[in-house]
Length: 133
Image (cartoon, rainbow, N blue to C red):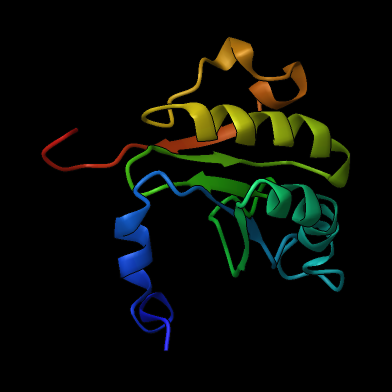
């Protein structure tokens, strides 16, 4: 049996810069069409991200309910970035952000390098705390 399947933290520790992309599966929340925006975005991103070896996770909430369709980029040794108010039409710009994030050392991107459509949608940056911070 694969050790990483039984102990997923081993995989994370082995690949400290392994990037994951999370999309909210409940956006827009508390509506009849809850989840459809995130699913539409996920359908557009799943294949391109898989080709880059990046996991796409559907999660219950990313805490940006007032600006639905939210995506977060995260890696164990990098800041966590959250973008809100997205749509499936942002696919190409988001792929560029994922590439820049993947290449970054700490996950810190220059806002000016983001596509203009995404600059105002960066809704949270969560730095990692600890000895290296």
